[in-house]
Length: 417
Image (cartoon, rainbow, N blue to C red; front, top):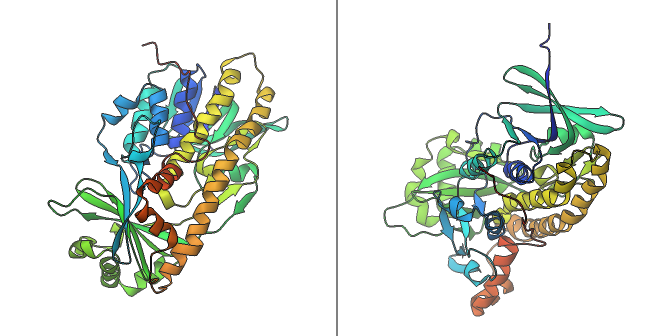
């Protein structure tokens, strides 16, 4: 016989314990809203996930009075971004030129540490409940609106009744598919292969990238190793594997000559993780009783490392617009639905603009590079301008580190204990 489903009741059920889900949960429980988070994994320890915490997210932490505690955890600080473009080192973005922010850097912190921090803070509130090893499987609908989710946890089937369900379950969102929400695919001509290469003794601290004909590799400084993102043509991983591991090592060495002496540390294909890049967004982010935010609403390219921070901004906007209604038990579920449309209206422009820039870079810069286009005689005009007038480096720093319509998390009370 099938397992009998257990059930529980909550005001807001968040499916997915990533940056959007846990930030939203923290904000709502600070506002007095009962929240249950379903996370399909048993912990947050998954490698090669975004770990760039941008100045916009650091300002949210500061708004919540958590910035010092957050930065007390191990992290690296990146104040400038550089790239080696056709053999020439080119400064691109300078975060120290940004004004009005509590910190002038990107904090590099493994995503699991970031999520652990958000969880620890949320657990200080009695309204917070996190169910690990619990996967959201589908939606429960009653009277024309979403009224909860079906899930499976360690004890078997689970039914969660909720006045609001928020899908934060990523770019392959199960809930958005179950809701039948239409997805607009914008396309991505690239995929990314993630790997680690050790840092040499005395090697400087610098996050950046390498661009040369046929190759593009970004490097993230992780203290004792480089987290490397090697770009390949869309769907090209099988061809890479067929050429063999030694050929792949040679490609990596050609892409980043300063790291050529350590490519033997790529011992096998298990050391190489594929990220299938997708850029898409929902035409409509919500239906009565359900809201999608973060990657579930708009999957981002890894360009600029902005995915985490847009997800956090979505969470802040959602909490700002919904907290008063959710915190009032007398407000019926149907009264929440107009607020869901307001979340999309608030966050659609930043998502669309960011994706438009990413798609343009993919098509006009990355795809020609990967196709082996010969290097131009001169650097592209935007890069030349950045070299001639260093003050202009504040512009890409703002675009990456802050972005359009940054959100503020004001008025969220700390725990009373």
